[in-house]
Length: 291
Image (cartoon, rainbow, N blue to C red; front, side):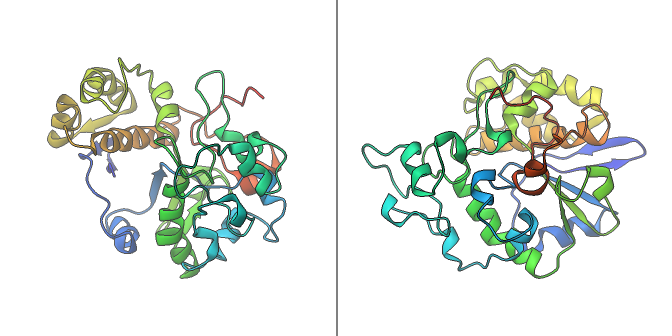
């Protein structure tokens, strides 16, 4: 998590740090702020073909109804147990498995139906991973399971002051004293918003370090002032360990949120009822899918 506080028109940004216990995260953030916006690098929404079979009116109500022990969160080892009530797959790699077969097991017409509209490729970036897929470096299913089961669902059921964008309106509409707005961010999208071009994979420390000057320029344009530890992290490429990419991504997510709050990026959501009620959208994204 990378945290920034707005004081007298300037954002003071700290260095990335572990989130800690999710159960106390919201209370800790709201102790020091009138309102909070959290950019989450994980899916907030369901693909429309899947959502069409749900009895709830929208995604927030769907989350509210899930319990921590719900079979929905159990990852399937094989297609024989995949169902709308247990959609995540696969538990491990199996020869010959395909996303088309996964879609068919869920009653969807093709592999493309596994993706939300915001997951699909645009003219500006490649496609993201489908929500229910849990294999490979590009998958997002495990992040969704961890965040939904371990934090969001229990918090919503307990009445926590959480507001999910874009299901309840625009970011500024949702901002309120004592509440936190949650919005989905996508680091690959944020890079393009910020005009940062990587010289290699962001998994590599040297590529992250080379992006430092461009990120510093983007922060200056957004009115973000880096605290000394964040400046050091930028110069250092966010460390040599396996979590360097996570720290880098968390800063990208923060700058994406600030860009929308400052009006540099529009608070855009397609005028599509499936997007606004079920699929969600990526904060700051304006490009529509190619197909």
